[in-house]
Amino acid sequence: MYLQGDLQAVFDALYSLGIIDPLLEKDWKPSFEDFASYESKVYEAFNLLNSCRGDHKSLMFSLKQLDMKTVEYVAMEVAKEFADFYARKATH
Image 1 (cartoon, rainbow, N blue to C red):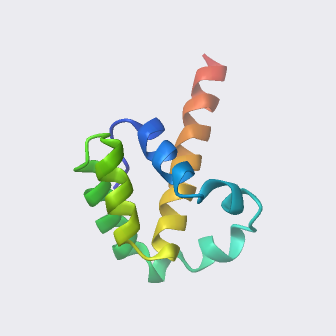
Image 2 (image 1 turned 120 degrees about the horizontal axis):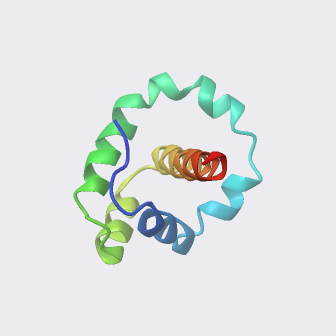
Image 3 (image 1 turned 45 degrees about the horizontal axis):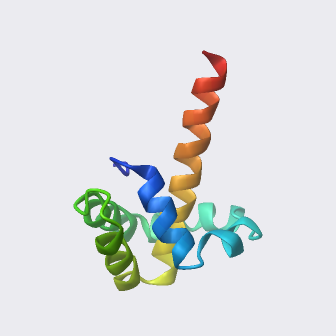
């Protein structure tokens, strides 16, 4: 399961909510180790966010409905997908 559509819109909504900067300063390793216990919530969040189709207001509303840990996993996924995209772009 992946986030689909406009990742920039999801990133912008996360940034507007103040999620990105603190997450960049955080050690992600413990979160990756604990992912299994949040996996179903994260995939439900992906479905919810994908249904917003990039609409900023809908994304903001949906993100506010999620618990903070799930939002952090969503933000980490956005970061990973952007990194993968730019890595592929740089190698081509």
